[in-house]
Length: 310
Ligand SMILES: *[C@@H]1O[C@H](CO)[C@@H](O)[C@H](O)[C@H]1NC(C)=O
Image (cartoon, rainbow, N blue to C red; front, side, top):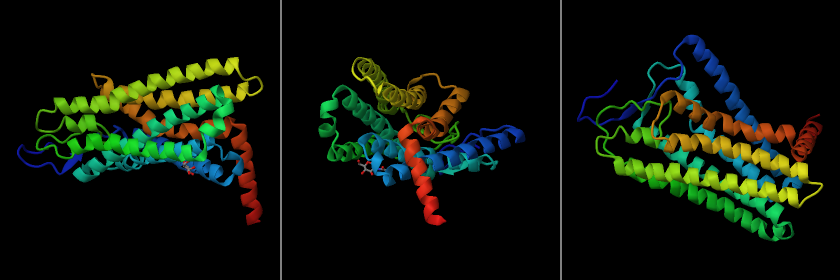
């Protein structure tokens, strides 16, 4: 599949996930079910939060934003992944490859900042309860969400501008089932050590730093919960452990994919699937199954819907 030297690469070859027919069907079922779950679950959270006035608190508004981002993050890779299960020649055009990388990093960057904002929201609610409503006012909420988008775009752009201009002339096998900076950079026909460092720093070190910062923050908040609140204890523990689970499952793969210096294909695949398929389904799963406010809101949402239909 490799192209002849000196020619310009116009398409990249992706790696297939399945070797056998049985595996193809199993993966088709697995990814389709998860993707439908991701779409329905996250849309359901967004709609419930928008239409239920009881859920118009910063915590749920941020949760709805996170759901939207989860849905987008997953949509950058999973539809293509499902489509590729059944094509023998998994080629992706140069442009689509670039577009995919760009949106993975915009949505990934926004998600990273949103998770930090959500931690800050919980910190304020639990450690500074008297000032919570003045600090996390609607204006602040909008500001933080806008900041998340701006940072996400800057994060993606700061890597993209370098990669879009790289010369590609030789091998074009990405060696993964989706396009991403570390893999694509390696295919450029020039010395890319400097650029590899930019990507490792921008995607790897930042996610590693944010990860440790968030874990320490949540431990700090947990310690404070024990000291302060009395009746809301179990509710706070629920929310915090839900957030921590999402944080671990989102950041651990990022750190591995961008920082770990010895890439192994099977582990790479596994971590990428966790990031694009498992994490995005987590919020709906956690919040619809265990959270009382959400359950009440959803029940009235569904009842209202059927009352109007019947
Ligand atoms: C996301 O956050 C913004 C700013 O607070 C809010 O106006 C918007 O409704 C949120 N989006 C969703 C889908 O809830």
